[in-house]
Length: 232
Image (cartoon, rainbow, N blue to C red; front, top):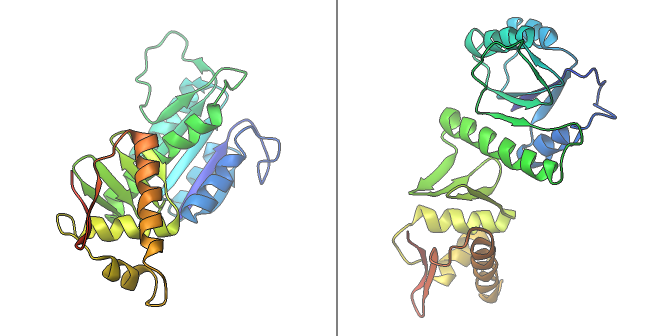
């Protein structure tokens, strides 16, 4: 997967000194994306015209002005790129524009908790795009498990999972409505030499994480002598 980062403030690769430099590590770490940096939108337009495709584009601009808006409209409509905006200042000279929903607006100080809010919105935006394009999400009602980011979305709350937590929940969701014996879970996720206690530990971790983060304690169920299940 490829993601383009456009820092219109004029930062240089790899965005040293840029207030949004952690966005690079976010996409590399969470999604394993190859990240491309551009100083200006026009450079991105040129390389896309040459045939390079991106799964998403994140643009940080110090000024949301009319010239910027026109370029963005071209990117989204003509080149069919999915764009997320980080905006500091709006200068539309009194002209009313429809501000995009996939954006985050900050003041000059950045605001307390800005990074957490930014990464949460980026995850929602990118997961949604990947789900539409690659069918990478297992979803039942308001519960969505994302393959690329290894995260769980409960309603509007996103919960980061470890690899084993993800694999366990994916197995339970695949067999939704059925109880899976502990031995079968061990066979799929570990091996015959691993104690069944490991399954109980991971179920406890998952339950605790979901309950404390999303307030839901009714997702993972257990019946003695039968196994584990999920229901909604």
